[in-house]
Length: 178
Image (tube, rainbow, N blue to C red):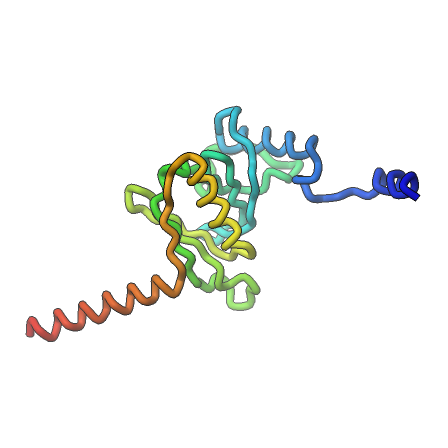
């Protein structure tokens, strides 16, 4: 019976790159080339989402970087480092991850799962349409902890509460100043 399973498994093609060391090695080379990363970097995981300009792509997480760009799995991929929808961020440049709820497409089943990445210079990058946003956030935080760096994670309900408090403060200032 084991021989039959072994023989059949040779003919079954598994599309999960993580299960195939050869495919994973090819993928890592593509990621290093596409994002101009050091040779020591490798893909830990990736997540499909959309950029703020609604360009479809993937977030690739490596030990020291967070990258966004087109799929590295396409056999027709051309490496264009000038792609404005592609970016690379050092994990140590991220100060905060905000889990937000944003609608990108009314009919999308992914409409509520967005992520705002706040950098140490206070600039914000928004990624939308995640199916597995929480797993992505957990993995980024885990990588940061491995290099003794802390990233603050803010949940959507905490952001709403902060905004409500800020609006209340603004109203109070307005009515007390008039």
